[in-house]
Image (tube, rainbow, N blue to C red; front, side, top):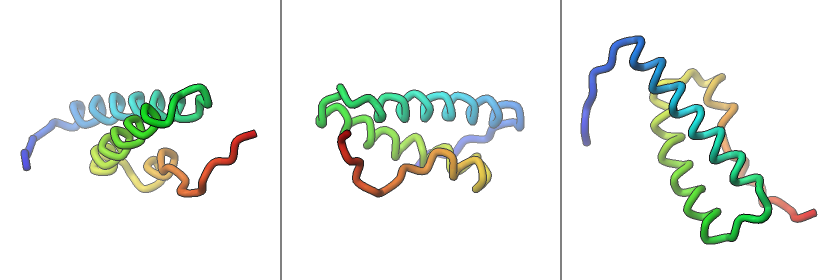
Length: 75
């Protein structure tokens, strides 16, 4: 385990970077053309980034990025 000390400004910047990364991964996960192996890798990475963001974000902000556990049906 590593520990870091960030200033308030650095925390805001880190939160911004993590949000953008989560947004990109959510966009990719919605793409039906992505193969299951790649989707699995994205989901694994998403969980890590989400846990990092959870340390900075309020519950309200965090709920925006929570993945649903319902299986997605193909249309």
